[in-house]
Image 1 (tube, one colour):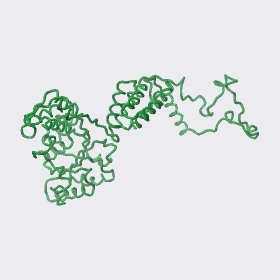
Image 2: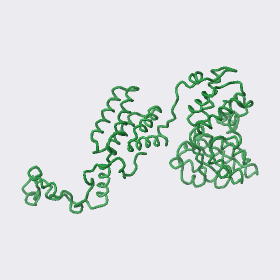
Image 3: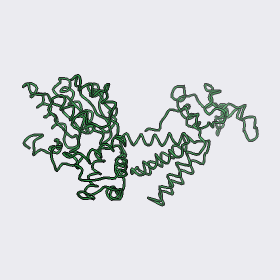
Image 4: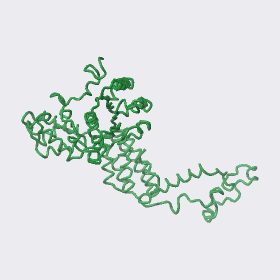
Length: 439
């Protein structure tokens, strides 16, 4: 290895390739200035953070948090260019912390020699564990590097607090359909970096490319490039050509990341709210994204006891039956049973009475003295126990119906305590329990 970022290094692929004719279209069309950047208006308008940094030269280390293809790498390169810093890209997927320490030490020596400062861009920074992230701290504090980390995961969970306190977190949003349409049209017409008018595309196809990209600029341009390959030089991108290129849309879904929890939260809250159409949509999003079917059914059973409860005790039976049906049928037919379970729960009456009662009882048990069982509720299988008063005062409810109201069954310290209220069934809007649907 001649140099960490030299031609023979494993990280050479991360170097800018926008000037190479054989570079992928998405790389060639990468914006070079903030004016070229599409979307992210909250960061780019006159009061936006990025615009202010460029205008004032008050550079800060940044954590860029957003989905794939929203412009994180592009923003880092634009900041490096605008700040006059050397751009050093690094992927946490391809390299380790030992290598990145060498880069930071090199930046420290370069700064001591009076050379330009270094902007270290770490893609997938959340791949470093929180202990490894401490390696950045002294170099960020001293100003030897300007750190820009990119992550698709929630920084609150994946980055340590010391690093977050030294960097500004910027949230980048997925691109909207109009923005992606503009990118595709720019790529079609750009004579230097794009397709230069050599390929025509009907408006319907451009719209469908933007729609299929799911907010990801890289995906949109890669799909256009595939269409260009299928259409041939001087050809035309039509819905038919696009269908061949697209084949089947891959739904973005990280089964372990934050989006996983956002989607299951959306499903849970939709069912709790009685929104059957929304429940079908969010559930199908997860099914199409490859979510574990057993995980989904476990969550639906949980909803049946947590949010439906005694308002419809058969909801649990329905979920178990649908779970068993899915296991017997398998995919894809079995998915219908999962959807049926979700629709049943969404349409069922709602009660969180058991959920609230269980929580209140646990709270009492944790915070109050655990009193002994009242003697009249204890069995007396021996003569000694009878002599000690075990069972005295017990009233058999089948023979003495008044016992159900006149005989106290709680310990003395909790006499009169109600966990379920009157009947224990609440309507769909009365859920005051803590929201636990994001675990």
